[in-house]
Amino acid sequence: NDRHLRLAAEFDNYRKRHQRDRQVMATRLQTELVASLLDVLDDLQRVEENGADATAEAVVEGVRLVERKFLTVLEGAGLEEIRAAGDPFDPEIMEALMTIPTDDPKKDGIVADVFQRGYRFRDVLVRPARVRVLQYEESE
Image (cartoon, rainbow, N blue to C red):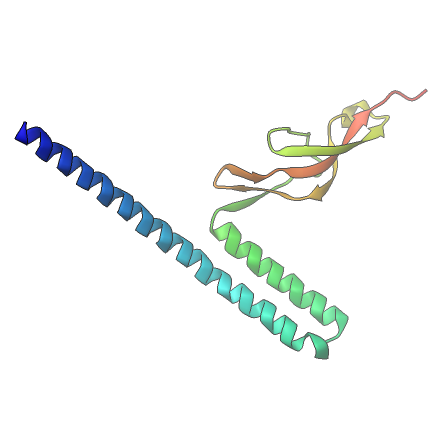
C-alpha cells in the first residue's frame, strides 16, 4: 500500500512538472512573438511621429512597408493567408456573404472577390475568407 502511495505521488509530481514545463515553453514562445512584433510597433510609431511632416504618399508607403513587415513576422510564426479570389468556393475555409449572377456555367461556384481575407495558423482556421461567389443563372 505504501508503494502505491509513493507511485501516485511520483506520478502527481511528474504531471505537475510536465504542466509547468509546458507553461514555461508557451511563455517563451509568446515572448519571442511579442519581441518580433516590437519592431513593427517601432515602425508604426515612427510613421505616427513623422506623419505630420510627410506627404500623403509617403505616409501610405510607410504604412505599406509596416504592413509587409507585420505579415512577414506573422507568417514566420505560422500564419498563412487563404487565397480565395478566382478559386472554387470552399465552405471549409470560406464564408459566402453574397452571390453574383453569371451566365457562364464554368464560373459557377467561383469566388469573384474577397471582402475580408481569411487566415490559417499552422493548419488551424483562424478566420474564414469572407467572399462573394459567382452563381450560374441561365440567360433568358
